[in-house]
Amino acid sequence: MKFVNVRELKNKTSAVLHYTENGRDVIVTSRGKPVVVIHHISEDEIEDYILLNHPEFKKKLKKAYQEYVAGKTVDIDKLIKKAEKDLGRI
Image (cartoon, rainbow, N blue to C red; front, side):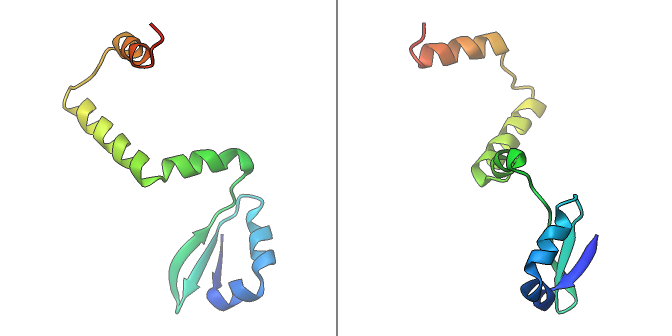
């Protein structure tokens, strides 16, 4: 892990990005305080990252978890049949 300030990031962007290619993180500081982490991400990981960090998806996950904790579960076979019916496949 490496720390760089905003000025160093501006002047050495390519070097900082290259540093992350082997899975090492860079913490960027502003006025001595951490503000962001630069973490390498591959093409294979980008779709998962976007989905997992999408605000609407996060809300739905939270709601689903709360329903699960409250015991509001649905049988998977019933759920599949309902989805097929809704999609007009039955």
